[in-house]
Length: 479
Image 1: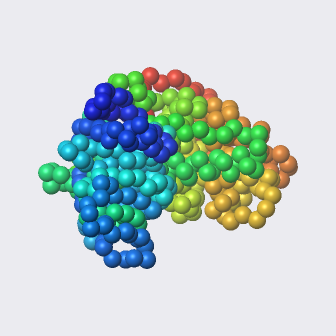
Image 2: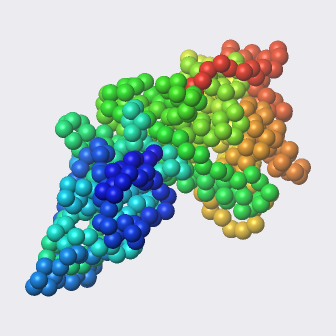
């Protein structure tokens, strides 16, 4: 995204979303270049830095004669966003674009542009001179960055907030070390504070999901250097009050609006309730669809529920894969409460999962590959390759990374495809094969990884056929 600004000396195009810090050119400094700020924002907040706290801020008082400039030296600037509710946990603006400017003669002058760090901090910016009569700076945030994408409204504008920070008017040098974990952003819409907070949380969990998945694959690459690395590709998440209310969430290969640009929808909820686990799972779930599509060209296609029978095993895999990774992320890799759900499920006296082509069956089989053993099977994907002491969490994260490399290298689009590739690549010894066969057996799968039962629980007379679907959307309307 780029903005066109008017210069006093002409018209230039300025790269608003530069990944690295952009400093004003020397000739621009000398000419006091002024850039028109025509951007709208989704909320503002203001605060003034304290004139005390000398331990954290070095300050220099102005001389008796009025100086022409003052220095701004930003050591640390950090805020977290809240909606003000007593039970709300504030969210940082992590790995997101920012722009810092000041207003002079009704013009907005850019001082810095960059990206916050993984904690949401802006750190150690070089000192800049501004006119002495300027006594405030503006810190504008955008929810997201060019590498992973943005949290945006349906007009395709990223959420943007402005924090106005008042300076000490009598000082020639303001060395800023500022933090506030209870900032509310809003506008004339009474609900804007609530929805800006939710958008900030979505951005935070989006960033954490990207980092978590990337680190899992990197762990696999470090242990097994010949495995395929993971590359992040940007995609935007659409979220806005009143849009897709209580309908759920989706990944759209051709864009929800037919724009031919893939995007994600996180739907609004009439209850305005977005639990941490709900947001973490669904952000990761839909982003996982994007990665599965990028690497394996997994098809779209709808389904009735995660427990329903899918005649097309492609549907079970693409949904089970996203369901699985979403749960790993939201539950910190601990799905032990559901470890034997396939074996114990009963609905009206019928097991809906054992040996059957369902999203949930796929999810649980994948978890058996990633976990480090349970009461009914003891297979762990990386057990043959570990070369040092690792915690259970580290092993599960590593196993997820290995599963990604299998999917990406062999472009698997059914559970049977994935299991065949896993066995070929990582099941080497007799002991491995026995454990792997047991994993298939306890989930009701054939030795080749195929589903064995129809929806009524009868043995399949012929293997399920993976057919191409025509849908352009991976739908997940289950809350």
